[in-house]
Amino acid sequence: MSTLAGKTLFITGASRGIGLAIALRAARDGANVAIAAKSAVPNPKLPGTIHEAADTVRAAGGQALALRCDIREEDEVRAAVAATVDAFGGIDILVNNASAIWLRGTLDTPMKRFDLMQQVNARGSLLCAQACLPYLLKGPNPHILTLAPPPSLDPKWWAPHTGYTLAKMGMSFVTLGLAGEFGPQGVAVNALWPRSIIATDAINMIPGIDIARCRKPEIVADAARAVLVRQAQGFHGQFLIDEDVLREAGVADFSQYAVDPDRPLLPDLFLD
Image (tube, rainbow, N blue to C red; front, side, top):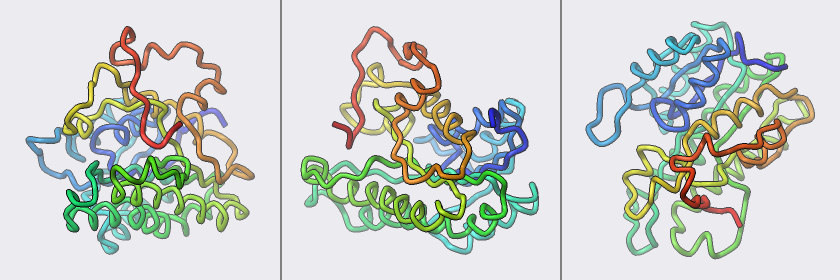
C-alpha cells in the first residue's frame, strides 16, 4: 500500500494540533476522516473546532465528519463510532491522539486534573479501541496508532510530574496490551512519539517552552502516514519515533519541519 485513499480514519483530538495535521495528511490522499473532539464551539484560549477542521479536511481533498465527542464518555464514543460507520461504511484506522497534560509535581496536581489525565489518556485510548475494534477486525488492513512514548520506568521521567507520566505511560501500556491481543489477529497496533517537542496551541500554554526550538506538527503527520500505509499483518507492538520512521522512508532533510531551522531543537519528554 502507498496511499490512504478511500480509507476511513477515526481520529481523536483532531480539531487542532497533531490530530488535525494527521487528518489533513490523510485528506490529501483522499481519505475519509472522522474528527472526534470536544471543541464544537470556538474557545478563546485554544483555536480550532471540529467544524473548522472538517472544512479544512474537505478542502484538502478528503471527506470529513465532525463529531462532538468527549472520549471520557462511553456513550459519546460509541455514538461517534456508529455515526462514522453509518457515514463511511466502516473504520480502517483508529488514531488515539487526544491527551490531557499537566506538568506539575504531586503537591501541585489537583486530583481533578489527575483524574482528567487518567480518564482521557489511558482510559480514553482503551475505550476508543474497544469501540472501533469490531469494525477494524473486518477491515483489510486495520491499524491502531496511539501518540504515546516508549514505556519507561526511569524515575527521571516520573519524579517531576507523576500524574502526567502515569497517564501517558498508561497509553503506552494500553498499546502493549492491545498489540499482544489483536496483533496476532492482523491489527497493526503501534505507538508514535516525536523526537522533538511539537509546536501546538497546547504547548503554547505551557510556560517556558521556546516555540522557535520546536518542530511543526507536519513531521508527526508525515510519519503517521508512513506507518498507516504499511501492511498491518505482522506489524504490531512497535514504539516508533517520528524522525526514525521518516528516515526509513527516505527523508534526509528535516529542516522543513523546524519552526526555526537555525535554532537547536528541544527534545521531547520520555526520550533519552
